[in-house]
Length: 306
Length: 258
Image 1 (tube, each protein chain N blue to C red):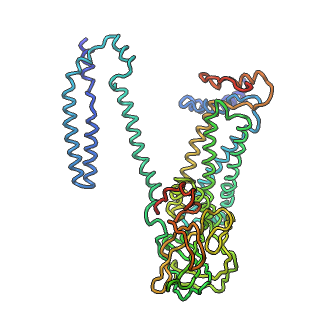
Image 2 (cartoon, helix red, strand yellow; image 1 turned 90 degrees about the vertical axis):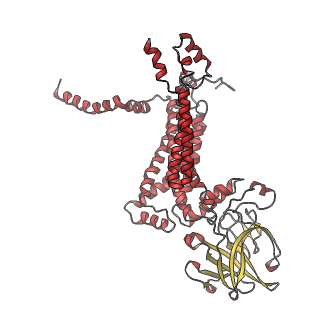
Image 3 (cartoon, rainbow over the protein chains, first blue to last red; image 1 turned 60 degrees about the horizontal axis):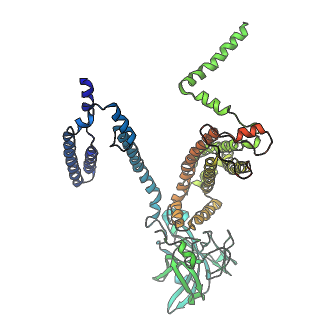
């Protein structure tokens, strides 16, 4: 009889959540040792407060305990089981802790890899359009002549950063040299568009060396065509046939010390007029296949940072 | 008893003893027996082997892929050369690469044949709907395997095919541009794109496919093979119409009651 009354009291430690706080405090203090003394102080504070509350919790507990822990009558057990909304039992508490800890550990180990896989692609500087490319001296461009210009926009990336543009010198516009520099990336799905016309490999000239080499080959395009799905463009990059959704992208340029330098790229919805009189509808550079104007642009409200 | 049968007995014991030893401790022998010798409807025919054929094709891809990974280098400067090396210089490299390259098409084609069989036999109906969904997920993952694997030779065809595939992803409304950028590992295709595709191709997707194949097979064994929808064997008809196992509720017949 003595034993049966004694056992429930001595083997029922008080239920307390403060040990978790103590553990957090210890962990915080240990992390602080690596990071900063301030974190150690915060961890120690958490440890002290939670430890004190834990001790208070445990020492206070025996008062209500005798009433609940008395040897239950046979009927009392049945009633408790039937209700179902009882304070947490040890079993349900352990089950919840196991699930909760499992979920917490699962999140802790899953989130970093997911972030690692998903966020670096959006890091500034990963994109190449900030790169500046020297296309050569002004004197090397003849007015009205089209050139296939091959260059590399990110030498550290190797051949994957090779790009091609179609360049034409339009003569002077208000005493400033005017160029038409059209990207060869098809705005349907990104294949390289080709010049519809004869190429003159014999007239090829080169500037720079190594990865900074730029190659100009004269060509006589009647327009541009994509070999993948048949998109066709005129010499200003406007779509004339096929699936593309806008005009060809263009490179922005500056004249620096008598040299033509590419400083970025932008998307175009439509070009009116030609050459130096062209009226270009400029938009922020968008991926191929994306509408920059019209009703469909509502499908692409967010352009990822690049 | 002749000495011959005595020897035979010993030989049988030599086989059955280790099997019994394993069975007693794991139950695996019984499980495999249950899997291999379970009852199937009497009108089951060769078309119902297309699923096993697809599984075999996947195993061929897994094994040849693991071996190819020992020689392949997912680096923009080395990928093409390493594949040339596998094909032209390594002993039987042409064969293993060919098995993987053409086996990929076999795998996709068999998945479609298997799906057509299930559809035409009505084997996707109650209680096998979940298995159809798992199969659909396997089909999508298998196609994605084909897409990511296509880039790995790193030649002109694979490069531009991947450019197009990534840009198709990019035209998806709202999230498309973001998904494309994650696939590309940057705003433009770069050196990391190849490594990313390689990792997805040889680790992420095969793992997911293996798990789903396990679920697919578990459901096949749990629910049983379905009878072809033709024939006029009334006894078997009744057998097939019943609940797949105890505890399942038989649905009320609708339409023409079939």
